[in-house]
Length: 269
Image 1 (tube, rainbow, N blue to C red):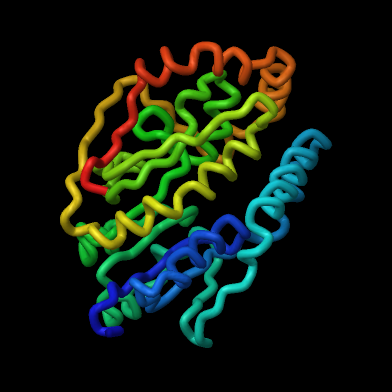
Image 2 (cartoon, rainbow, N blue to C red; image 1 turned 30 degrees about the horizontal axis):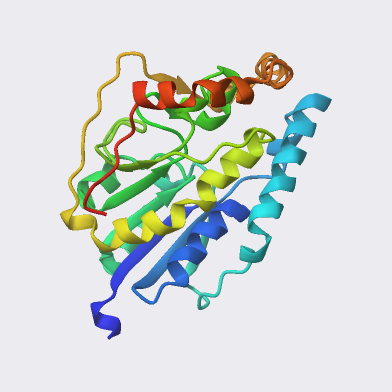
């Protein structure tokens, strides 16, 4: 029976939210996880957020991540099946590329990892699935669900399953989801809920990956964010939005906003 299972390679980070996704695949009898590549971010990254408000933001993020994913901290995989590398070094690591070529995976699943370079796209064309936490093409890049909250555009919070091309979060879209939003939510509870809700659709997409239609969705008003964009000013705006009760405002206009900006829902899932 094992020979019939799809061979999956997962390229991701090592935080609890990343381990949750890894466990979804590992705990499914329908897949064989050939390898997990975990990108490790240095501890000093957090020290660079010098202000108290930034430190508080990340502490709160870590707290809610534990609330949602504390039961998924362990990865049960044989020794040698997990490779840890420094963040942003994947495209320089020819050894990893050689390992993947030898493994011949059916699908490479990317979640919260570095942008894959042309070497990977050339070898594994149409075999790479990315989970982008945000609704492409409206919001692309890093922490886009945070930015949708900062910009008072909660209608653009969600997740996008898409194939990878040479752009950043511009590949053909297979499917998108939006989270449920409650009055007492904040950016962390909604963001983690999006990840929690991935499970059902992710398994279906991996099982039917080769046969699922994908769509190119153009948007001239696409917003793109980098880590350098995360500033004290954006945090101040986030907290002002809390005070202005933006969730209450969104829920009042929810039906109108969601109809105005429909997401791609793959009818074959």
